[in-house]
Image 1: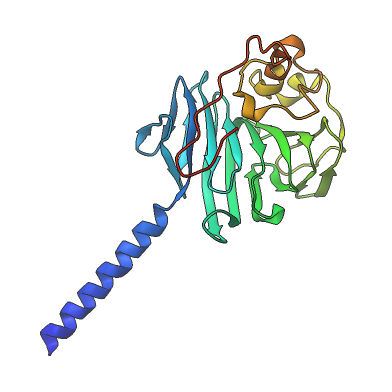
Image 2: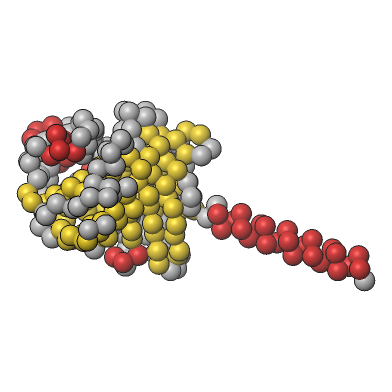
Length: 256
């Protein structure tokens, strides 16, 4: 009986360990575009590479990654960036009850998927971005943690130590610093690159990095920051110089 009890205990422990590993490795989404160097815990990522909970994604200075999450959320990571897929809880097979990302440095574009708006949360060194059915770009300066958010569509809020500010108008921007305040929303202009404290801030709006067409198409365009350099202005009726549409990631719907 004692041997049987021991075997049962070992079996139960093994089952618990397997469940924990499976949960930790549960797939959040996968890469739909990789340029130059984008890395996860197991090494370089490629198109269709899966991404998992607790995975840290980093890019080289010229790196670019596009990701499609299970609920249809699109997330782009620009050069010199680091972000952790920190926490998630599935509501069902295709939506999240909770999805939290931690952005340490770099530049990003977010386009919400099918989950409820309150399910999304993006944590930065200066505070937390709350998503409200939204498209926005944000940058985090590596040394100071200064965070810039530019709203492209929908609405969002930013909460720091001094309180919360809501973004409601397209092309409005806020600037926040760790332990400091959050600026009032105002129309973004080219001075934001100096304010952000990084030459690589907001590369998708400036045109320094171009995304595939599924990340464009909203009315706000480049918010006046990129002129003809920004990808949104390269997709006219003639179709000239259009970036290629990525192939749909298997199991995650159409990325376009």
